[in-house]
Length: 358
Image 1 (cartoon, rainbow, N blue to C red):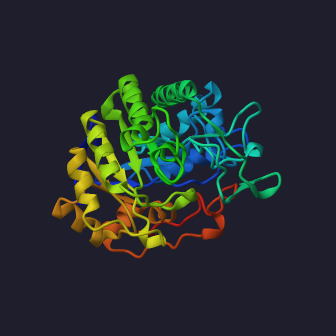
Image 2: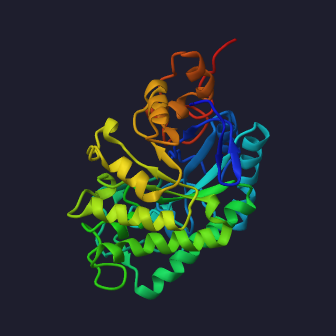
Image 3: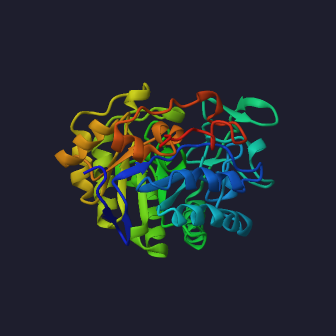
């Protein structure tokens, strides 16, 4: 099943393999995509669906050094060679819209940008800056109820910009402790307005963004990524987390989104998900379900055959193997990822991984 075509919304994927989103920091300091990004994604176009690294939907969401954006005309134009390279090689590509929220430092952000979150509580971990190295995260401004609506529209504009740039769709990053999860997670979100105080209120921001982007570009071109029990960026499990995320999945399913993408980083040291939660989320959502987490060809195939997933995502294997599909088909060994070059500028550890020699 792994190598069978799959219909996802209005597009057909060449196989059921997904390239998971991975921050690579190869854009300019002004958050504009670069030429080598077209090479990088084009090299991996044999993967059924590519989900890009996190892309800032606004200046306020560009809190990491050299992450790309989709909020200016210059950025839209710079993405067009990337989508063209993937499409010309027969691939499909979604842009992951990632608002960093409190996981930000002003030194990485355009002039006039603000660090924002659900609460005025700084990220406990440092943020890397090109100018000063690791620095304490900039304390965030807690969005007012009125300001939340403007942020929802930032996501809408970025989704429309993604389509204008040639993307096949977008993935909303509601995982890994970024802005949307900063509203979802009760450990941080102690608001008492319409966006806090109950599971339904904490879910409201994610659902409003999903509904608005779906209305703008079509629900079948909008996916979402979730990480219940994830601890990245100061998150972590909280009382009632499973029930809240099941309620969220039902709400997202009612919108008929393209897919739900579940983060499972247990293989990388993150807390393990409850055994039954993935299947419960899949049922609650009722649509296409993407599984991830330390998969190889055999375990990915097993998930598909059992019906536990419709698509399967690979992260570091896709990063280090431009010809991942060919290697999986042939049972060939995989290149090991070069951890030292994950986030460094330039081609090393980015576009220079070797492919199989015929």
